[in-house]
Image (cartoon, rainbow, N blue to C red; front, side, top):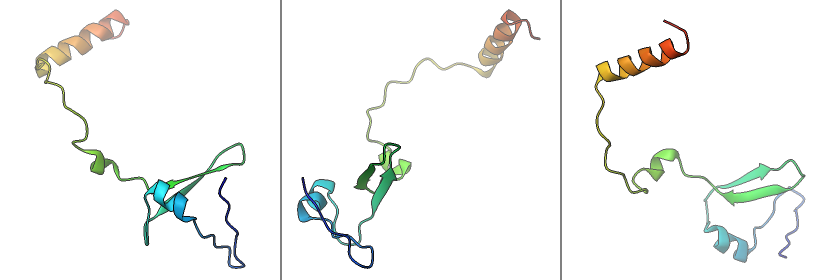
Amino acid sequence: MITSTISSKGQVTIPKRIREFLKVGTFDKIVFIPLEDGRVLITNKQNPAIALFGMLKHREPQKRISIEDMKTAVRTKRLSRGRK
């Protein structure tokens, strides 16, 4: 267990081992997420979704479907549900 003390200004120094574990340094942002059980999750700032682009391998595209085929599929599904 690693502990730290809250200063009179409400500040806490994050111990070096924790900074290394979170891979954070000077001017990096960290996030505090309060949990319902009274604990707080501390993590490094999450990257925006755009930063994830290209990380996953893309599958080969499946067979393309025309607009008419899509409209037909929607119409068929609506009719099976009793709607026009």
